Length: 168
Image 1: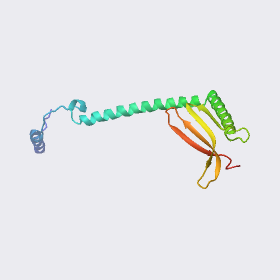
Image 2: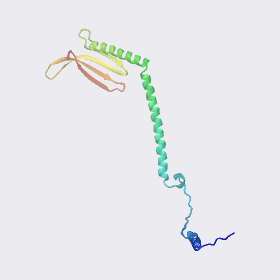
Image 3: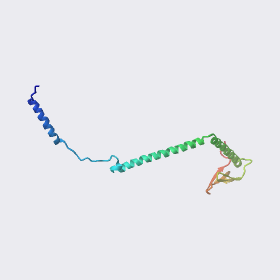
Image 4: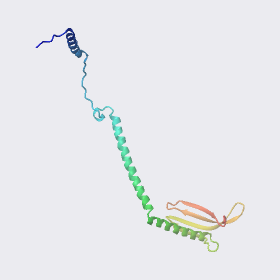
């Protein structure tokens, strides 16, 4: 076997590689390894903002649940108000009040059969009316109905209704 001779260029390359390898540690550097937690609950850095974010998320979730409950209750209430029985009761109540109102107006304003006074109770309110005559500052007298409404707390409201004016 023949041995191959190493040339000058190959020796030069070998020397450059060795110098390069010995010069590497001079440029390498190291630092101290420090362990830090990413979660602010453990590290304490930014913990108050972290807690505030968590509290805001919990509050918004509680508010959302409360809104869902309220909307479900309102939907159930609307469904109950729109039931056939509820519509029937409202219609019946409306007609009864209309008849009561008509009879009351006939008793108060009727020309032949009008009563001069009366009282009745309606939903906890005592209503007293009296047909009388009032004269203004010019001496012109007219018939009026004075209606006094007393609520359950004792406060009163007085309404004066002219009779025979504003015909249709």
